[in-house]
Image 1 (cartoon, rainbow, N blue to C red):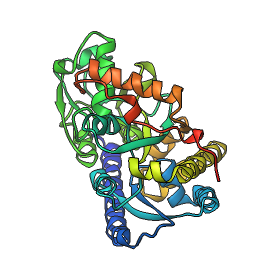
Image 2 (image 1 turned 120 degrees about the vertical axis):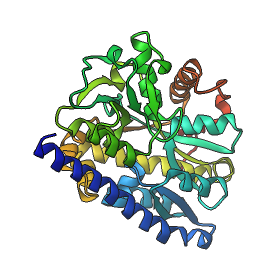
Image 3 (image 1 turned 30 degrees about the vertical axis):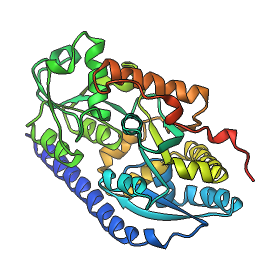
Length: 338
């Protein structure tokens, strides 16, 4: 291992720890306000990963757009978190202590299969250039087909984004997930083990995909947009909240759309967020090459994208059956702003 790789590895691990520590502190502080919500407050359970909702809280770009949209509907946002462990944010939503949060589409479909009363009101999509499979330095792999028998970190949960993009990549060359040794690790542990070389490859997304690529000698062997990934981030509310406050859901959606437009016009807002959080400079530079996510409604086209994703999950064995899409989403654009 070279001195440069050692230094970069330490920086990557430190950045991961810094992000976790900051998020944990925020979660502790924010969680105490959950019971103070009033009838005019939207309680936002903020996860620590970057998306158009969290970008707004951290950068000030969407705060104005979201606040203005909510103000017109007679509401205001109260931020809870950010939560470095997403399941804590999800629990806040599922137990009625929060009204809004953000998750991966795979989690939404899992909730639908469990008949949870949660619906998506906005899709946050990219072409898939921000996800893929990266092989560590010195591992004799030139393509996905060479992963057979090797160890691949895939994130903390079966069927998550890393597991999915790996399965899609393997399927494209006639292999299955059983042809590799999947290792389920938190992103912090996956970073450390990939850097140390104790796993051969890492299937991941977003800042972690950039971090993996930034390690000297690492090679990208598959990318989401090359293997037909239908994965997406979703912004969700409880079904009760969507039913009782459709105008507020529309306001939330419109605020996110404004944020996406402004971030596309000034993509440095995205990279600045990662840099302020302590991400390594090499990883931030790679993040800057990713396409800025778009916000799309859960109209017919949006539901069809979710259906394609659900079909993938069923075919790949991550879901037993496709959930009924009427229980998954609400079209925020079908409601007029009051």
